[in-house]
Length: 522
Image 1 (cartoon, one colour):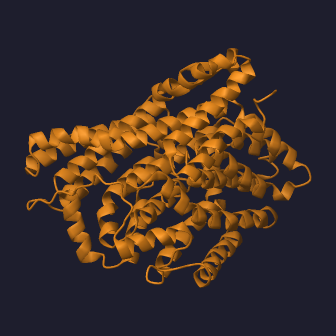
Image 2: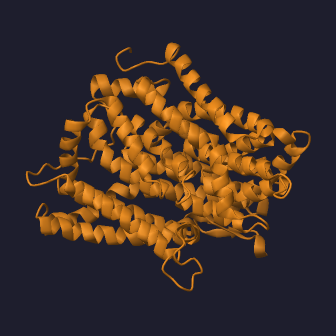
Image 3: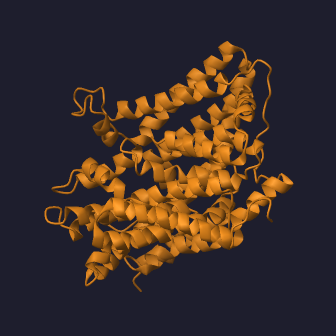
């Protein structure tokens, strides 16, 4: 029986996702999904004994088509290793700031200036928008800074993780200077007659999911209600004080700690990470060909090198700054290395499992199946293609947990469907649909690394984060789908965005009158 390049390629992630949503347990669900993928590959090769080899370390196929598999491959991949280093550095920085009393000092300041649940949620949103360089960086930084603020106003960690997630990938996908813009532009640059960064910028107004998510988030925070599982989480937080935290967050209060002990490390981290990404991208290298060109340097950078580069320098500077300030002793500061690493172990474990599952899905030829499905849909539905592309990208990103892998697969297909010379607007809409669907699928997938980072940033149970945000993300996804249907015929971003915003606000008013509840109405 043929498994590669068929619907069977999507079975392993589907199994993992369904089990995770049923059992509320992430690790075992991902492990079962990995086992199913390895079993299918072993059956395809005719050697079932190889199933353990495929799970741990192995390769499937021969020659140029060979694919590396297994846990060891996922861990040893340079990109993944760089992200692990970045996570550890962020964990150490958070531990240092907490040990110095910076988080408590920020909480005292916030208590004087942020007086409501709405204010706490909007402050989290605006901070998330400001940190648009990278989604990992966004999730962990915003989570560490805003947890004391939202906790003080009894905002649930589930709501915090949704706001973090909604201002991570969706914001990065509409920011011309970000690691995501770099990934999209590098993917499109390899296609003849297409400028990657120009195509990315042109696609921003049509990226309905990312833009309407912003509208949705602002409006629902101001209206002050929730629906679905999120309403229950918010009620538990407000009425019973059950925020949903995983614990291990004992805040240290020190009389000599100041607001600067939190803000300065964050600013240093942002500056160092931006400089790191520019440096790796060749911004100051005369031989790189992008010297002095900001957007080109971001397009040429490697976030798995630039982010660790910047975070290591920021961590060292923070270490010595806090010692000089005498808010921590040398012993307390060095203990933060172990504490920060421990705090990031769950996130790194989930990432390892998710990345291993992605390797198996890729080896099974998910891209081949999607390519054939999209080509089959093209006949007779030409003006509907943007909406179809959106759904295909959403489904693929949801099943595989990777938006970058999704648009890496679909962008060449979209360019092949729409001629850049004769159909530039439809090409732009098609690319936007691909990017929007990839972000949406990534946003709601339990095995997405960005979703994992949002859970880690809010320090909340991962499956609770996923289950509470899915109704919100699907609401925006449904409206975005309608917008892409209209865009295929109207081909005007302003009209579609206005209509989309009206639909979002109208849908929220309907939800408020029907199933929506405030924390005082339950």
